[in-house]
Image (cartoon, rainbow, N blue to C red; front, side, top):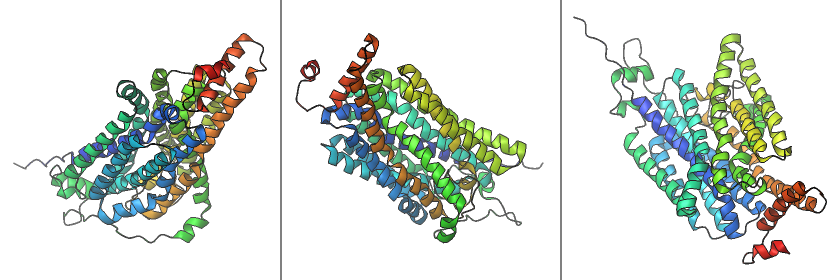
Length: 453
């Protein structure tokens, strides 16, 4: 009787779950400070410009250290590098609670960004070694959605911790979660699937393929790469994609950094309501990310035209964001603004999905480069990491500029308080005046007596 072939094990899906959890933790740790920001501003007397500089310190480090972080993953392997990086940035997360002023907040957030910069390049290197090419697009979609999920669940979790234990415990708890993950990762992951006890020969053959003799193919590991910088810098597609990605990242960081403060201070929601309402646009981003990927794959199947499939979804996503974000800024109704912001967030994240699949599925691309799409065949890890870092460097301007814009909107409301004649408008503008005075208060003075004057 002929023996039945051994079924492949599922060790690679266990590793995918671990990596997805790390992606969730990265965004949970990035955006927790935005929900805590109104409380930090009140306690330390920070205005919005100061908070914008604190927020942007992370993005500066994240942009500057992506290429070195990717090099570390290529040189030393994702097992050691990710374990060290996650543990390091988790310590920096916990240390955030010990900051005593603007300078210390900026320093800690910069150090935190250094650690997170190498997370996605290292994780992509890990997936390149563990999954066949036909599964890499799916794996990147799952992990990318997990990161958005981390951003979406952060506001209610952070508000719950703040209201029960205080804002400093937000950073203690998030830091502890990251350290636990780093230990779990180091004990569970191996750089090559054949070294892992959960992977049998059948699964290894599925991952690696077999040669004409029936032997499992050797892993294709590149430790060095020659970057064609001249070709990269002369490519019109590269510059077009970087410009498009800049607009996407700029909008993204306004949502990630400023949405809770905007809802509390300009739209006058309570902190408890912000825990729910601030997560709605981010949940819409999770859905949009998935819908964008499905839509571009469907268009590609129907038309067979990769450029059309990728570009159409990206263009619709960017224009859809404009259609809804402008009414969100102009409407007087707070809930209408939240609904418009939710729709606005759905579209840019759907536009980021089309570009994720093609380059990430290349065998030697250990980088986070969703912006490439089908426009290039840049075969090296460092070129794609650098393309991700350039828009990040420009988009770091979003935080201080958005902070100044929020202050300007409130100043405008203060001026209107002396001009409007209707009772409803006066009440609305009094709220704007109080918010403005609260943000620019002199620490130690009684705010009630100030507002009465």
